[in-house]
Amino acid sequence: MLTLNERLSEAPAENTATLTLPFELRQKSRFRAHLDDGREVGVVLSRGKVLNAGDLLGADDGSVIRIEAAAEQVTTALHTDSLLIARACYHLGNRHVPLEIGETWVRYLHDHVLDEMVASLGLTLTFEQAPFQPEPGAYSGHTHAHGHPHRHG
Image 1 (cartoon, one colour):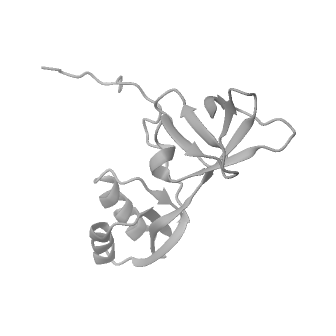
Image 2 (cartoon, rainbow, N blue to C red):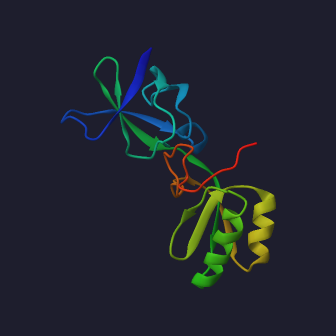
Image 3 (cartoon, rainbow, N blue to C red):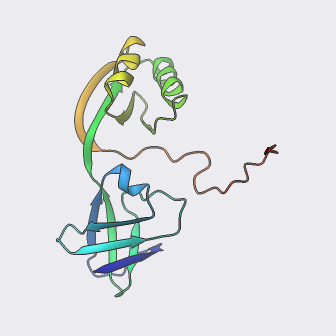
C-alpha cells in the first residue's frame, strides 16, 4: 500500500495517477482509499486543509497523485437575481453548510430540508450528480487563535 504523506506544489513532467474522492473524504487528513487505477493508498497528511480537485500529493515511493472531486448528489439553486442568491447563501451559511457559489447559482450537498428552505426563498432547484468544490472557509487551515479573546471556563 502506498502512503500519501506530502502536499506538492507542482507535478513532474511524467503522468500522475489520480485519486477521485467525495467532499466528505477530502476534508479528512487520515484515511484509506483506492486510486482510480485500483491501487490501495493510505493518506496521512497534516490536519486543517481540505483537499481540492487538482491538488497534488507525494507518495512514499516518489510517485505523484492528483486529487479529483467525485461526482456527488448535489442541489444547485439558480436565480438571475443576485440578491436572492446572496440571501440563500446567508441562510445556508448560517447553518454552516459548505457551499459552492457562482454568479447565478449556489450548490450544496443534497438535503431535502435545505431544499425546502431555499425553494421557499424563490430559487429554482436542480438535482444532479456533479463534482462538489465548496468555498474554503474564512479560517481555512486555522488553529484555535481567531484574532479575538476567548473566555474559557
